[in-house]
Each structure stands twice: as structure tokens, then as C-alpha cells.
Length: 289
Ligand code: AMP
Ligand code: MN
Ligand code: MN
Ligand code: MN
Image (cartoon, rainbow, N blue to C red):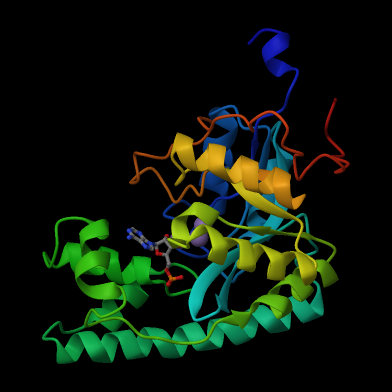
């Protein structure tokens, strides 16, 4: 690659490993990201920092800077919102305690999803999802993979539509962390809070504005402007919102593994002009820039 192309680092600040619902091990993820030209990768598993120790070891041998992160499940205004914590201390006790409480809720929810699917005539889903979960976290993604395996639907996406979203048999309502608490855990651990994939919640402009106002007033810093799940139009819209609300901008693929061919590592668009990168004041020890 030419000198010019290396002038700016490739940041990907949102990814998953087997510690939550990704299909690669933390080591596999780091190696693949590095091979794809990512210079700075954040591992941001759902409600867990368990993959970070392994990721750290893997990154030590490679020209890749690992950012310790997490993607926290939040309930705001009866909606599930995902808040990324980036560049934090994964050993912070309050963060750990908070994540443990979410994991406990997840465990109950997984059993409840299993019971509800059972009533709908699908046996063994809880055990199946548990088997497919390599780490501590059981996600709806694991249920989806199990149901595809059982021939209940053709794709993971179809399983969600048919079984796992609101008003479907395997949907379990519940309360995740309050927004202010999640942001508090992240900041308390020295990190920055970022609203993940803001275009994906189906919020109206005014609702999204309310979310971001609340987010800012409890100490949130940035929104994900470039995301693997955003269209070019979403990126443009979110860049405008970030600028007008004086929020920084993040960039992340939300990579879950090679089974999801529509998102590959190292292929994200750059942040639009006028965005202030969430990493602009980070000091990266291995950075040559
Ligand atoms: P959970 O946190 O256990 O409720 O699971 C949420 C995860 O399921 C998200 O992080 C995505 O990885 C995945 N997911 C959610 N909705 C869909 C969908 N419609 N199609 C495929 N995966 C989805
Ligand atoms: Mn996921
Ligand atoms: Mn998410
Ligand atoms: Mn994610």
C-alpha cells in the first residue's frame, strides 16, 4: 500500500467474538481484522468483556492496536438501544458488576425464550442455543442459529422475523440497563460512550433527537456514523445529526463472523467530512502517527 493510503489508520470500533454472538474466537477475529488491513480494532462483545484477554494476547504479535470495548444492552423509553463503551478498563469493578447483572438477566431470558418456543411446538431450543454459545452470553443469535439448524427457517434473519421479535412466539420483553447507568459504568471505567448503529432503531427524527439529548446529558460522547448496518443515506443523515448535536463520530463494522457475507472487515466507508472522530484525542501506544 502506498504512503498516502497509510496516512490515515483504518479504524473499526465495533466487532464481536465467541464471547458473545460472534462466530470467530477472539484470536481468529484479531487475525482476520489484521489481514483485512484494519489498524485499530475494538472488540465490543454484548454485555461481556470476556474476550478481551485473549484478544490482547493475539494483538500483541500483530501490527494491530486493540481497543478494549463492550456493547451494553440498554432499555430507553421501552426500546432496546445498544451503547458501545470504547477504550475502557475491562477490570473496573463497577463495570464488571453491571455486566454481571445483565448476564443474569440474559440467563433468565434465554430460559424463558426456550419455554415460550417450547409452547409454540419447538422443543430443545434452550439447550440448543446453550450448545451453540461458546461463552457466557446466550444471545437471540444462538437461538436463531439453532432454529436454522432445525430447519424452522432458512436464514437467521428469517428466524428473527418469524420467532424472536416483538409479537412473535419466542419474544421475551424485559428491562436491560438504564441509559444513565450504562453510560456511568463506561465513563467510570475510563471509556467513552457511543450510541451503536443509531439508524437501526426505527426511531423518528424527533425520538432519535430525544434519545441523543438524554444520552448527552448523562455523559455520552459519540454516535456511530459509519456502521456495517447503515446505508449510505443513513451515514449522511447521522453525520448531519452528529454535527448539529456536537457529538463525535465513530466507525464500526459490527462484524459477527464470515457467515455474514454482507459485512466484511476492512471495507467500511470513511467518516464524512466535518465529523469529529471519536478517536481524535486517543493516545495509541503503537501508533506511528
Ligand atoms: P440479543 O442481544 O440476545 O437480544 O440479540 C441481539 C443480536 O441479535 C444483535 O446484536 C444482532 O447480532 C442479532 N440480530 C438482531 N436482529 C436481527 C435480525 N433481524 N437479523 C439477524 N440478526 C439480528
Ligand atoms: Mn450481535
Ligand atoms: Mn448492536
Ligand atoms: Mn454489535
